[in-house]
Length: 382
Image 1 (cartoon, rainbow, N blue to C red):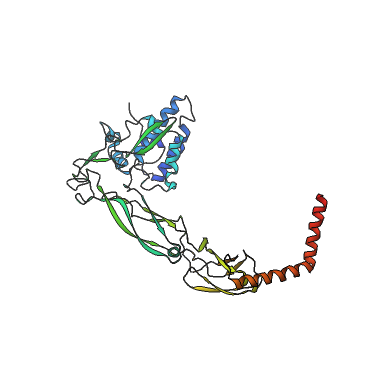
Image 2: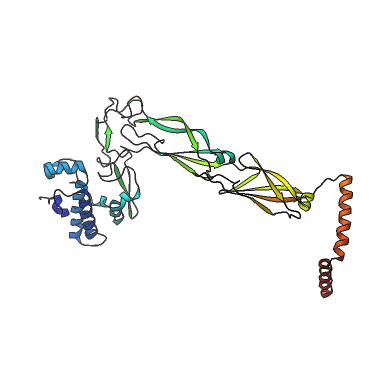
């Protein structure tokens, strides 16, 4: 039975662009999808034809072969879509994936039956720095276990150092991807045999066994910018695992942890520092010196009668701001300390102070009002 022309199946001209082909495919696939036409055998057959045509024409190499040889290019075990299996068409989700996959930021994706640039894996590293290093920024070294291109075969995976010495992968049929049924869904994965290339090395390298990469530990210099926060993830493009010759290496993601500081607490660009005050300092007032995260010291004026927990703001003495010359503010929170070990003279002075304070309090309107309320309370209980 003669097959329809693929361009006619999609309703496009032979010189149609890739976007025009995709647009026509979207419309027809949605129109004839079995989920929208349950039990309609004609719609199912039409859906197969549309998918078969698009599977060929969306691939530049297959399209060139079809334009030159027609359907004969894919007969007798060719790599085309002549043996297209309806079960691989997937559900509506697969159609949406083909329609909108380009907008999802997938690397190495796109047309060509799932075969794209071979991608190396991403790797993760973790480092821990001090708060002062996060303030100033720093450079540190991190050692990671990764994969690098095999030197024996120049990253080709071939003993002859020839990437073209390969055969079509028998697992995926050169598509680079395989599909598996999971319940009601078809899940598409990178082919485990060819790692998504669609080809299998004919004479694999004896060192890497055709993988084109070998494991190795690398030491990398990491620059930590000033103002980095705890939990920040730094991406180093191209510093991940290698993907062999012609492939694109993955990325390295460095996760930064900032150790807690014994004096300073950080909230964004704001720093909080708790400073102890003697009773005499809080009562009489005065001036104190406090440490600053940049290593300097700042003077803070304490007014007489300061209470424990009060805060004082130091503008521009806080933490550095990422990718900015600005700095946040610093807040000093005072904590009035009660002495636990007194000299004889200190005890005498405090006792004198207590006697005077008690006498003064008894005659004050505030104290009289307080004691009156206490008496009224207990009289009411009686």
